[in-house]
Image (tube, rainbow, N blue to C red; front, side, top):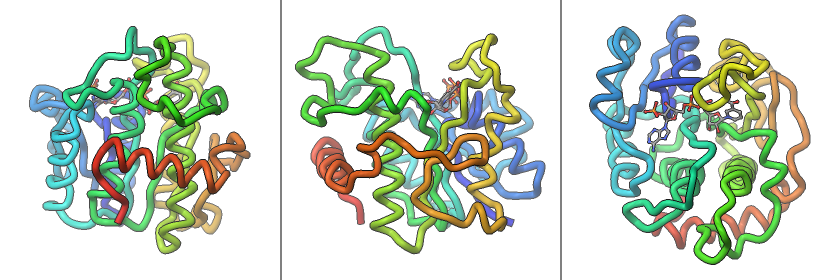
Length: 255
Ligand SMILES: NC(=O)c1ccc[n+]([C@@H]2O[C@H](COP(=O)([O-])OP(=O)(O)OC[C@H]3O[C@@H](n4cnc5c(N)ncnc54)[C@H](OP(=O)(O)O)[C@@H]3O)[C@@H](O)[C@H]2O)c1
């Protein structure tokens, strides 16, 4: 049985993934943005191997989340699930970054670098990552007028590129990205066509399954099937430039 850390597990796909893994007999370390949100985990919280608390908007709190997970021990798998979709404006995190970038890209990058390396990494992307292709010059939205859909798409491209880069840089780790489809969650809304049970299935399968099909790395998945991601995500130069820029923005380098 594995131990799996899931970011953003107080609600939505993260919570559903936690429930599914616990029901299969695995151990799960949950994550909530605050003590109040951790308390709202209720019965799920009492079944967890631990609950890391911290707001991913903040680099300082993100570092503390990594410390809390490392204190529990080495994870077999980490599902980088937490995310935000439509932010009304760029916002500014405590470190001055665009909110969408900080939560969806900088936080998973930092946690990847700061948490003891697990055997498997899974990053929640989206089919919308295909709209995120383009320049890396204004990653943090300091010069462009705010465009929430484009900002989201870019972050979802970043995590596919990160997942594929890690598959290359850390060959002993299985690193994959998942598009869960348009799922009925707070983010997806009630008219989404995919139920939450189906929406969580691919990432939990990649995290723990010994099915030979799941024991692969550097792939982009949708509903248990591999798909081709956007070209930039696969390009080594794009991946390397992205990682260099994330290191500059966070002050954290990949070990
Ligand atoms: N639903 C879809 O249709 C869809 C489609 C494609 C991709 N995805 C991706 O799937 C992932 C999960 O989405 P979802 O639909 O489950 O969204 P959701 O229902 O809105 O849940 C998001 C989770 O992330 C947490 N979170 C957000 N901002 C945070 C922060 N600053 N600090 C700590 N935790 C934070 C939330 O915590 P709180 O509950 O405390 O806010 C919640 O647990 C996301 O990465 C999303 O981009 C979803």
